[in-house]
Image (tube, rainbow, N blue to C red):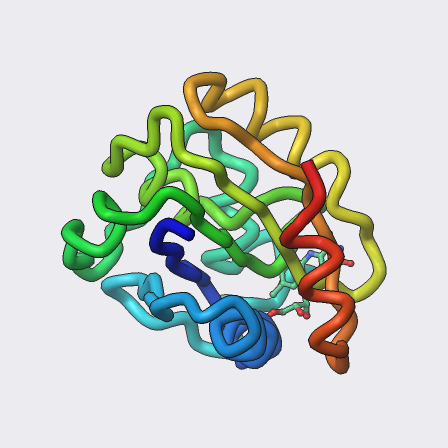
Length: 158
Ligand SMILES: Cc1cc2nc3c(=O)[nH]c(=O)nc-3n(C[C@H](O)[C@H](O)[C@H](O)COP(=O)(O)O)c2cc1C
């Protein structure tokens, strides 16, 4: 089997906890994606139209800066698990910053998310439309607790 990595963006730890479990279950290297400027609780207030997250997600093509990532393990991987919280039913802009900066052509990318309740379908639809050169596999929303079998079933799906 080829190499795999789990890349994730997480601010309050929910997606990170899932990403850690996926990395253990699939034997993948874990890579955190971090915004250069951390989000404060006020930045994450989706009910405040003046908050940073609200602005970034509603102001067109925003690409917040992210910390540098070592591209070597990503280049060496055939399979990538890509995790994020849903923000307004889609990926936080940092995921766009990441995907704009990496060449994932031909790699199998399995998107996963956590969310309050929104399913992942719309986010995956947009990823497929915006990054058609990537081989997108089935997306999955994970609840906060999950079993190794759940992860394996998803990882083996097309
Ligand atoms: C700015 C913002 C927007 C959000 N939008 C949604 C949403 O549209 N639907 C939903 O179900 N949850 C939404 N949530 C909840 C998060 O998806 C959820 O809490 C997630 O598990 C957080 O992941 P994290 O702890 O890895 O950052 C939103 C949270 C934030 C901070």
